[in-house]
Image (cartoon, rainbow, N blue to C red; front, top):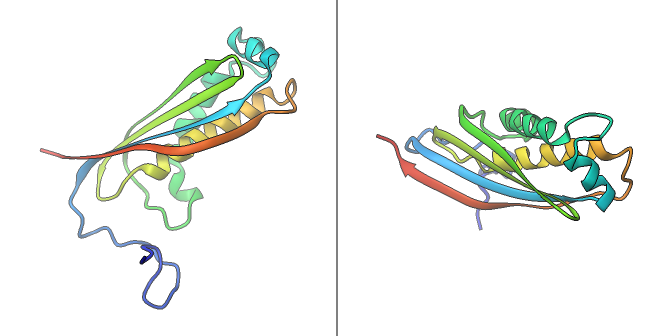
Length: 150
């Protein structure tokens, strides 16, 4: 298998996407953070001392997606059309879903994955005073789509 981020001499290289067509690209990523039941209760009732963890995590996830090319070497800087971050609070934690959209020459998978990762880290940060056993995990790409633009 040929790696796209390696040149003919084996050196790391940015992929040239200039020959690719401009299309609408969408990626959806998911992840989760496990929390103790008491932490979930505090989160749901907005009683964490640092404030509204989910609101902060949503904004941070969106900002993280916008900064992906600064965090991931060789990642293209994309003009994002939309990023959304949603949460499903369960009895034992939070499931995080991020959707990134751009109209361009390369996909937005890394932006969606970064949004989930950063959102999870913010929840961790805002809950760490009350929960020492949180686990962030299962971060993965679940959907990727392309459609022609008119």
